[in-house]
Image (cartoon, rainbow over all chains, first blue to last red; front, side, top):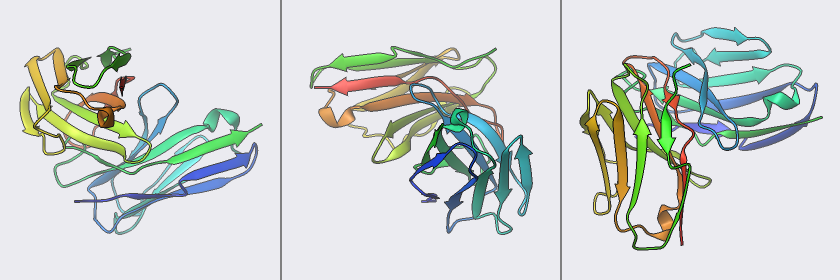
Length: 113
Length: 113
């Protein structure tokens, strides 16, 4: 069973601060996806990283896939209250992205105004 | 904007009753997933289908849970009999093969008393 550990589990910071959340595993993934979930809704995809060492930017969000494709990080610059939510990472095994993703338990992020 | 639709959004039932949750995947998506989300366990994969055929239901308690896709526009998840420990949010998601994103519905919040 492939497990993904996310840290921290909870994070509450002030608007304007920077933060990094982590997603780690002992397993190698063919790709890794990051989702954000808001209360009462399903997770929504933010980004997919495929290549070891890959860095992708989405406005103030920077995603990195580890060289060995076992871990990933999400860095948010100048966090805003709209960034509040549950951030989930999900790893795809050898079968690809639509073959039963393994999800981490998520990081609950609160950005206080 | 294509969406995965789940019904009902909320369900409260008594222990021992049958519960049926429904999902309409995005047209053209050939893979459908059922996940269960709780605070303790996060998102757990229950079952998934490809081209309406069940591929993996190892995450599901088979004595009481069943998942079916009677046609390409409908997936169902049934619990009979329901138990209080089944209380959770159940998500349906659909996707295509190989590294494409999963599209989640907004879930069915089930409470079994």
